[in-house]
Length: 182
Image 1: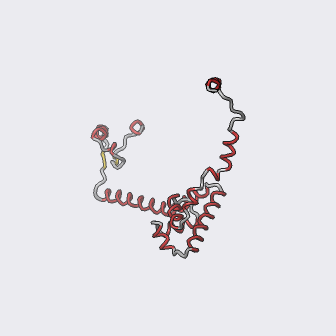
Image 2 (image 1 turned 90 degrees about the horizontal axis):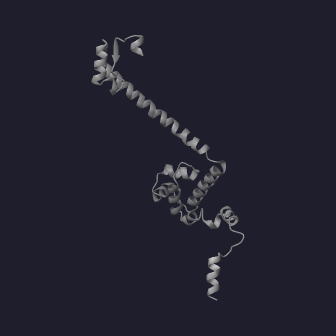
Image 3 (image 1 turned 90 degrees about the vertical axis):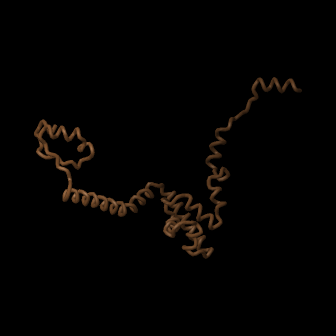
């Protein structure tokens, strides 16, 4: 479209490899368009611009990581957030009752003190494995294995009971087989 409207005099070659291929360069030269390659000061400017973009992006992600984590937390249902906070507080209380200092607890659970602090706050971004490791150090893994046990799943058992048949009939083939054995 640009060639129909007007032909540029100079084309920069910093727009990707498709604009530096021999076919493209020859087509531009056929229309009398000069190709400007970034070299010398232009190349330095391009490198500095790229580095500034990388630096800006890393700063942006560092600033917004906490906001992203909080946004994920906000998407959890409120009862789940409360349950995680209670679990974290219970873990903290259990650690303090056992008189285990934070650095020692973190070492025994093979995690950083920062991760342990997140667990004790009930942070939902910490993996379930992290919580399980801390519970193991506290000697509370038996409670973990029973979390979704059918014994505690009252709703699931009620639903299963509703699906049970009202009556059970013997099939004709099994009643004939039973009659012959009498």
